Image (tube, rainbow over all chains, first blue to last red; front, side):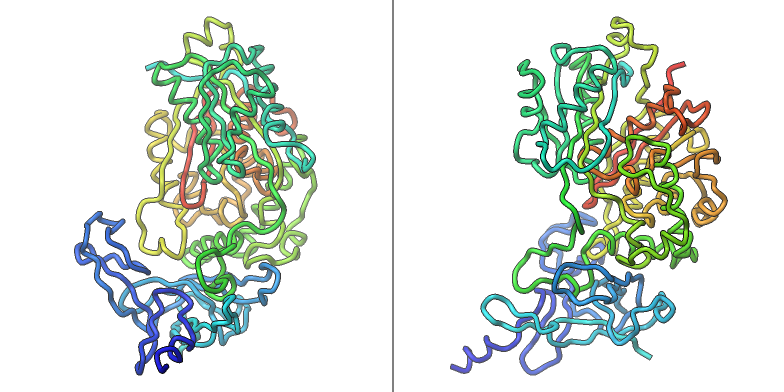
Length: 143
Length: 381
C-alpha cells in the first residue's frame, strides 16, 4: 500500500530529473569516460568520440550561469506567455534548457552570464491524462 | 569527371494555394523548368524530388503521373529545410558520376500557417513553455543571442536584416510579399520570441521550384550552353558534435564546414562571390551566416548590415530575392528556389533587382537537425 502511495506522488518531468526518496532532487547527466562529453539521458555510445559502453551517470550541479535566452511572447494555445526560455551552463559541466523564473521578462533585466540556480517545483499545474502531477526544474537568479 | 550545368530552372510565384495538391504545385515548376530550356519530360533520365510534408507519399512519382509517366527512376528526398537543395544535389551527383546526362530536380511544399517546432511529443506532459521553448522563432532567437553575447549585436541590427530583405522583395514579382517594412515597423511588430518580431520570421507559404541539370557534353550537344549556369560546388554536411547540442541546435559549425569545402571545390573564395542567397529563416540567422560563410570576419556581421554591404548595390548583396523572410519559405522548395534566384542573376535576367556583373553566386540552406547544403554557381563565360 505504501508503495502505491509513493507512485502517486509527483513524477519527474523528464528522465534526467531525479527525485530520490528522502534526499534532494537533482539533474542527472551521463558522462563519457573517454572524452568527458556530458549527455542528458541514458545512452550506450558517445556521439562525440564514438566510444561504446563508457557512459556513466553523474550528478549535475545545482548552480550555473545563463548562456543565452529568448523571451517568448507567442506560443501554442494554453501556454502562458511571456516567459524566458533559457540555456544554462551548469557549474561542473552540462548544459540544460528550461524556464528562467524570478526575473522580469525584459531584456534590460536579463544579463548573459548571470549566475543562476536550479530549483525544483510543480510543473505549472500540468497533469497527464491519468491525473498525475509532475515536478519540473526551473532556473532562478542567484546573488 | 564532367562538369554539371543548370540549363533550365524556374519557380512559381510563392503564395497560399490550399485548393491545389502537392504534385500539382510540383508539376507546374517542373514544366516551367523544362520550358526554360526547351526540353520535354521524355528527355529526362531521372527525377529527384524534394518534399517534406508528404515525405512518405511518393511525391516525385505523382508529379510524373501529372506530366509524363516515362518510367524513369525517381528518388524522393526529405532533409528538413535542406530538402530541395538535397534533391538538387542528388541530381548533380548523378551527372558528376556519369550515370545520367540530363535529369530533373523538383522541390515542392504546401505549408500550414503558424508556429513550427515545439510541438513536443514524448511521454508525460507537454514541455513547451515549461522547459523553455522548442518553437523555431525561439530556437533561432537563442542562436542569435549567442552572437549578441559574443559581439554585442543589437535587436536593431537583427531587425535591419528584415528591412533589407523586405525591401529586396519589392523588386521580385515571384516573392510572396512586395511590401516595404521600415525599421520602426519591424521593431514594433508583434514580438514572437525576443529578439525576433513577427516580421523577422520567415513566411510559411506554398511553392515549388525545379531545375534541369546537364552534363557538359549533353549541354553542348543540345545547344544549351548559352544560358547554362555551372555548378562549381555542391556540398552537404551534417552537424558535428558540439557541447550544447542537446539543448541548442548548432547551425554554425555545419555551415562553416560546408563553406570551407565549397570554396575549395569551386576554387573561389568568399571575396569572389557577387551575391548570396542564404538561409534567413529568421532575421537572427542571417547575421550568423555572414560570418559562417566568410562574407566578413567573425564579429563584423553587425557592421555589415549597418553599412549596407549586404543590400542590393552593396559589396555582396544577400537575399536579393527577398529571402525566406519575404519571398517565403516553402521548406522543400526553398533550396531550388535559391538556386533559381542566383542563376537568374548569373544569366543577367533578374530585371530591377539584377546584381550587375554577377559571375559567381552562393546558395545556402540549413535543415535544422541538422543539414547544411551549399552550392557555388558560376556564369559560363
